[in-house]
Image (cartoon, rainbow, N blue to C red; front, top):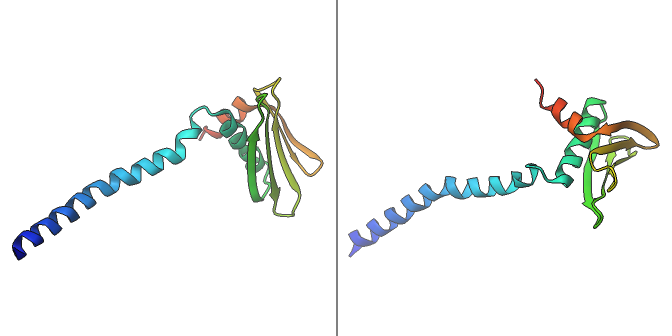
Length: 120
């Protein structure tokens, strides 16, 4: 009877070890799933890319919301406490404006920013 309990415990442990990478992969896939073409994610990443390229140190990464009409607005803060605002209107969904305080850092195409960030 003791031997049977040992075999059951070893089998259970083996199954748990075998499933661990699979389960971890599921959570990783779930975390990156929105990146593939999600408008809100594209606006956010474009904003962060613009800020990084401009040398703006981010204290609070922009958090984005999408309104029912499709407009996306993101708000955060730089290391100096200035407001960061990233906006893509419903009428011009391919464009983004990135502001730090009252200064415009970028006003142009989202796709151009994302494509440039992918270059080595």
